[in-house]
Length: 304
Length: 260
Image (cartoon, rainbow over all chains, first blue to last red; front, side, top):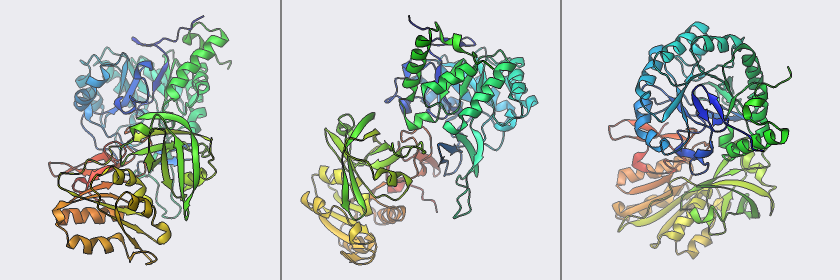
């Protein structure tokens, strides 16, 4: 019996529950020779701000045991640059495009949406309220519920497309933010961004990253993300896109059982670009073997 | 660009601490252009998640070879790789060296095993010329006979004088350059950063072309993660970040804004 892998994030239909984590897949063309983009449930592109942005100095990443730190600092072409450079490419594919948006000020988020909203290829917005690596905005919006809610309300006022706030992991109660997202008009939430972290070179006594601190990603953060998804799922009825250290189908399945409707493969793209295909296939095999008729049946089935 | 899950064909000591790893690569091998690289996922390095980039030394329809020296955690972990062991590569990556300009005299310049990245170019070039290879000792001057067999004159330099001219590669290159029509020279360079900069500075000062194979810590290798960026000059007098993995690794000396 065939399994229905499709899911919905607000009005956005995904043919399977697997997307990529913003910042780990470029804007699409980077991996197009290695991954069949049409297989993805959705493509989530690297963060887009209102204008072109240069990002941080180097070193920007540092490998740690089992994972990596990054502090790229959201370099990118800006909203209009994204339309000019990448939308023609992305529009060739039959895959929803989730644009991750960020701003230094509240108004910036509104500006990005104003520029992008008429573009049909843009299917949904993931609102980056939790980047640990930009001085202004970023995580400041993600760790204060008032400004968190106000950004979401502002974006909600400018678009009918699904909006998906990306939550910071370093909050005392993620349920509060999940509920605030729901009350502010979000269609879904994504959990989690990388975890604020640091590494120091013991010879030079200097931090390993030019930005001094960065975000930890990869397998070490998966159990943190699983708990955050589980906590958030108890606080909101919004669909959750779960991510953090997904390397195998079993990881993605665990996120779904914890309460994630969809999942994103992130750092694993750098390790093995075939991970996405393996995860999609593995979810289908698991659902079929266990007798589920659809992916949604598995969501939130944890006995806890 | 392809990802190929494949196996080790041969792995052996080459000279001194240097080693050669030959991989079956019927998918990647035919794609390789001189100056390109591959990203290797080292299975023995299971507590580390990132691939390691390697210049492609040799390539043909059946496979690829890399020439390396175990220096860090990744290359140390490669030592036990044996014939038949599984490996996973992505390649071929990067832009590669351009064609030699019309009427230009090709010159190869390498430091240490940097000449591994030049071998395919040396083979491809119809016009052969002079190759300047620098190293710390005679043990670090590699592949001399192979380049000679291709028709290149090899002029080694060593820090300790154990082979060729004593000193840096510039100790042999500079006096030779003085006797040439400098603007006709076209250099293909791979080696440590100070050497790349030294040759790049000479290219600008004396008006010749120098293609430099730039090296910067790399993660994804395909242009997505934006780790390996260097400053590239822009037409308006400013600079932009360029990705060594995708926009490079080969840059002309005039493109680079060197950082101290």
